[in-house]
Length: 320
Ligand code: G3P
Ligand code: CA
Image (tube, rainbow, N blue to C red):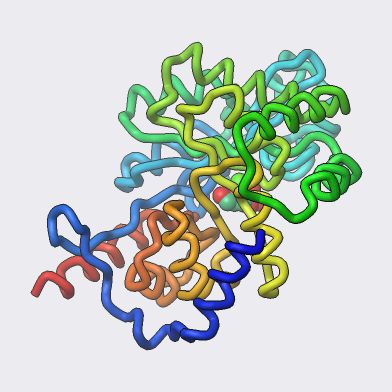
């Protein structure tokens, strides 16, 4: 951790301010402005019911490079797409997903709450969403929702590493053994999701993301060629330190912070580590413009059509 901490301190001492980052960075290869890609959050969810096939289709129509979805495990160990632990908010049913079978979940209407034109939409399975993405030629951000509380396990791991986040693959393998011994349901969930992605041969078109470092580590260990990114909402510099620490321990490829917590200094720090940044959830036009100018890699938004316009306008103005 000390090396990273030193680097962070240096960035703060240099004092990178937003005012010196108002021009889009240019690609080293082409010299053209480096523009962010769009990830449609739960699909184009400002306009269609979140996490449904309609919402994913609309995201592609609105020229998103990616759509994002949230997935979790059913009582009979299937992978279903839904943001919440329960179906209460986004379907006509009630109950906890972990207590329901896939067949029971598929009976529910997941569209009508958003408008009668969406009546009859189902909660999709992960396989259905992957098939659709392949058909539409778009990428998928698969967010794996934690299905267990791993706080104690995480504390034990942190203590045993004694602050060192620059770990070898052997140490990471030992950590995975430890995670397996703890019998956390999150390990089974991560493995099941990765297996489905591999079965569909979608490794190159999918990014796994999670707020759980345990899930990130398990997914990355199971499929080293699959991109894995770490979600977080770090507020203070200390939280950022912890966010970066866990991401490095898990071996992630990118850091995806809640957008208001990102500063140019942290963006530079993550890029200097050779990792990417995707910010969420950016629906405000000024914020879309700001992050485009800062040079984030991807913007996660409920309004992909608006974000496309902003990126297009920014690209026109910087190429003049
Ligand atoms: O993609 C980032 C974002 O989806 C994380 O938050 O609660 O919308 O899943 P949430
Ligand atoms: Ca999500």
